[in-house]
Image 1 (tube, helix red, strand yellow):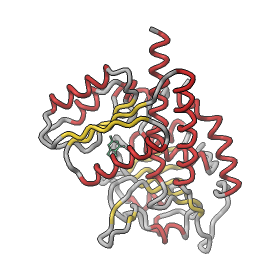
Image 2 (image 1 turned 180 degrees about the horizontal axis):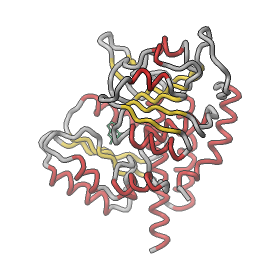
Image 3 (image 1 turned 90 degrees about the horizontal axis):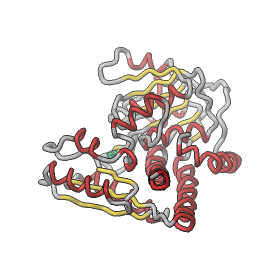
Length: 323
Ligand code: GUN
């Protein structure tokens, strides 16, 4: 059984509670051009998930003497990475998950980074390891990600965890697509037979997203920068996941009336605001449900990282119990 199904009971209860209060459930209604999409409030859904993590972390401490701990490694001074890492640390603190940050200089060699990872792999007090991407150009990202113990790989990027996702026996899965699945579940969206279009083929979002949707019996198309007639593909989609890394790329007119639109992107505008990859206002006129930026997928990614850390801490107990 997938360890994260451990969260399922609480999730269902919470979803119903929230659905009554705040979020409309998905129905197969036909939208007309005057309808406005319901917003999928990632902040609220993430908050509920983080509260469950907090309770789980407390229970692991009191019942098993395990203090769930996440180590985040940042190499260099990428400003966006610094913000992400700081937010991850803050979220851990609030959820009662111990967080340790290693800030390494830009000139850190690959061998030095691998040495640190080996030390963290061997440390029983460390349950999750996350190496923030992108890494400086002189370090091979694949070698580094493969060096992390699959049981501590809270990003779900290790080939072992990717393979398990492909095989349909996931253990630790990438946080962003995992968060998207949780949002779809929250609104009660049945993916069976739905046409899903993912824009973007990254290892972090696009590819694992496709597998997760496929496992829920959606018909999945992965589009990318070389895709022919992207607007036509998006127009045919019941579900659109935009994760191509291009600001305001998806036009409102591309959205099929009634489609569910998930915007994974986050970009800072010249005026200091944040925008996603979808023209939100125009798409909202056609979609049935849409995620905002900010306050959509972003908070979910961090909440799923915390859940993965709890899952990794549970894996560690299982490992000890078996030994
Ligand atoms: N950089 C951007 N997104 C991510 C992520 O989800 N995990 C890591 N490790 N680095 C990232």
